[in-house]
Length: 137
Image (cartoon, rainbow, N blue to C red):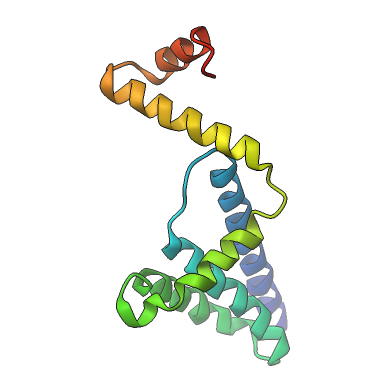
């Protein structure tokens, strides 16, 4: 049973690390994130920390991760909305070290790209070329 528990724990760690790097990448490229996703990430991290501290079996992660998804989805409703600051804190910790100028430029580029695609009915490639020609990229 310990080998299965170790496998479950390692898979949980890999899932959380992938999630953290995905959050960093979304923010770096100028895309936003939803607080519900960050609350879910917060609970997943807390689950990974609690299992060894409380000396629980790693198999508890098999119910803790789905419970974190449920809590994350419910965080838009009133009693659970008190969890949003924890999600925001998790997002800020995940994004430590990102270049704020690069993030702001990418966000501006993304907004302009969406504007060109929707208003002028350009493809993404054509909108990018137009932005490069105008010096907006």
